[in-house]
Image (cartoon, rainbow, N blue to C red):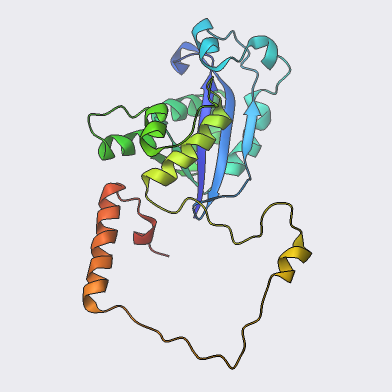
Length: 237
């Protein structure tokens, strides 16, 4: 299961008014684990950035002057997201801008939905927490995720935070590492391996009884409902 957590920053609020994407940030989840294979790109929008937008993300025309245009990175970006499930907070906003960028290049590129499926975590959060604030900051507070380092909006930073929020919202395991700690090389890791005695007593297998299986299914049903149908244990292999 390959999922891409995506966020953008823009010159303003409305692509129909000519506003453009100036930053794309993506992090990759493989089977609900961060892979470290990210996509991050600043873009020259070829227009002025609204003053209100600069206050939000801090990106200026001077900083972006020597950055590539969207047309120069579109192929790499499309190949990165192809076949994945895009996870976006307030997806219509980011999709509207990115599809506008694709449209400016002509009809050959289609839309993002031609390359991947999309899950909107804002819509998901509204189902889970009706009547409550469901901004990214509010969800971080609700799920105990530290975002104190987020002084300004940034596409990659917000994508990284959203990845933590999404994993918490969907009730699954955030991470699991079977590796030795940082700073230990392969030889140190191998030295800790101990072979079990082949003559040891066999472990007894205790299978779940009918009541335990029913309780397990009930728990999965509850997770499936709470996550709006996104419970990974209910998905077919």
